[in-house]
Length: 221
Ligand SMILES: [Fe+2]
Image (cartoon, rainbow, N blue to C red):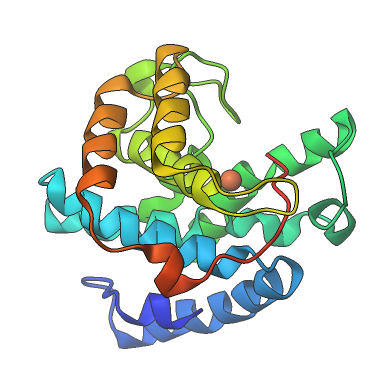
């Protein structure tokens, strides 16, 4: 999985800083991959969506790089969540769910501690924020949530909908877009970005599930 990091350059950080971050990231990613068979495919597809949709949205080079890195590391905080919660068969109880929800803030902290990745720490920390204020960890609303976070939230949910899990078949493209639009109507997602993403999803010819795999797993949050 670390190869996904190798295609990114961290401008003005220097080779030694890059390698230091890479060396710290690799065991974290290995640990996540070992615990959760869905993780690698999900991350690869999220990175793909980030770059492709980012270009379509005419994001600049820096924003696309940040969106890619955010997609790559958005769930890195799960490395600090107990394995019995990550791998629990069936739904989480309220206390376990509370613990699982800390992964966003934990991921933000990890990125700050990784130095050169501090520029995406906030993006990682806010990928579960929702425009209607029901998200976490800060309960941010509307434009308090950065544009990149609003995009990343849609990417993550879309991929989960399109993925096969132990408890569900993958939703079709049409079903997935319907669900995204319902979520946007409820204020859980940015409506404008959702519509733009829906156009992108319909138009894209490349199926990342075929390229990057679609492992069975459970969805906790
Ligand atoms: Fe997450």
